[in-house]
Image 1: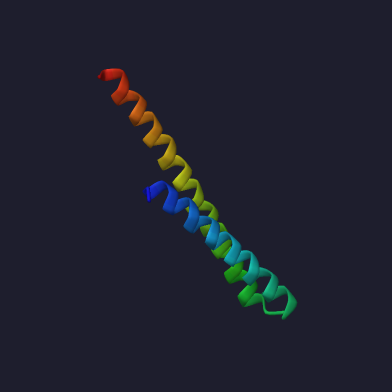
Image 2: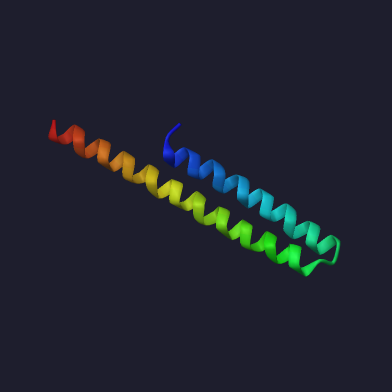
Length: 69
């Protein structure tokens, strides 16, 4: 599996996990858990974006290599 795909998948996983923690914190009136969920969700978004950037770079490099061939 490509690194970019792994980062996008892991990012999405952390986003979902963060949303669940956020809601659990709200439902149980646990601000600490809610904050932890917010941070994990944001971290997941960043990781997913990193995967998207890596994918764009991979495509650009492939096009560049093809043009030079």
